[in-house]
Image 1 (cartoon, helix red, strand yellow):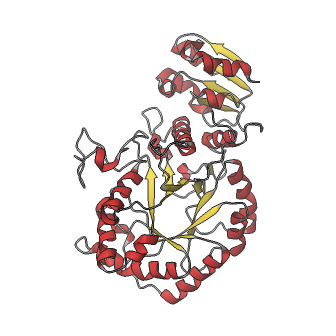
Image 2 (cartoon, rainbow, N blue to C red):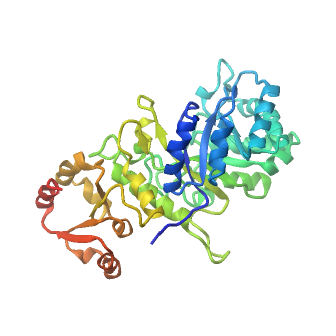
Image 3 (tube, rainbow, N blue to C red):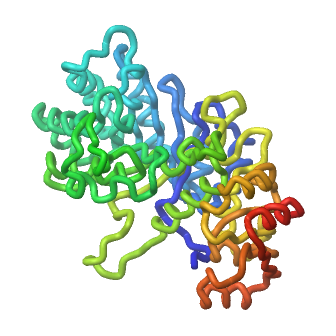
Length: 425
């Protein structure tokens, strides 16, 4: 059971814009980040002006490490002297990690007529290397920009070609200081999709994944990127997942075409549990290796009207998604839950039975109610309703519920009968 577990590499991606860095924003979000156990945060920065020092120091003083992601236009001239001033300021204020550019393997990231697949990586290196040098000179750690998984130019090929290009040009020193950035979204795949990397799935090739194989288009994308680094550099690199986990669009089902909040919570909780794993022996591999130094869940917050609003854990003018309460409960097991009544299901697929889903679809976002199949989560609730008899629960797990302070009730019946009872919650 996870109780008050501090996970040093747990983090979040902040807003998908550069406009929420006022004092009142810090005062609002800092307590929320602490309650959910956050230690890292991805912040988008403009190349024209710095994120305010007070905002950054406020995070750093609470042991939350900011990763500055500067999403500049590709294919346009860069004013290096002004950027040096920004880099120096960030370093002076205590920032360590700086990611430059975003998804350079996508056509839409390039302005004008700059996109050419034949020498795209070389064009990118012409822009990236001087800035990466300036980043290192300022005392910052350069983060190789996150690529679009798959992308118009296949991401694993782009990464390998870029690393080889930096070595060929004589910039091995930059490679030695590099941290890999990645977008580790589930993309409507199971959480284990692509685990093991290309070593386990040798039949997968750029732009072609056989029906009986898997690829990097999932949460385990970092294994595929690490394989490229080891092949080129002969050693692994640290990895930061600038945006990760299950987005609402990654848990679309027939019954929930806009995404299932319960499945969204379950998937992200499973990643949380894997991040919390520790190994007592170097011979025991971790689900998420130590080279992944930060996993920033997508997306903390977003304004209404933005295309990313459905993914926001704290959507503007709406209640938080159920995943928020789950994270808060794990990190604050003795605090009052934001959702006090837990409906314990035999399995997550049970919620998608037609008769059941119709009954509870309007209740999925209620503040006082949460649906799930985790006894560990149920232990934090004040009231637990067990669907079906307790035979599907291991005796040891059921005894944890009995020993807890929650009120337990069991509901019996077939799907239609239970669906009717669920309407009374």
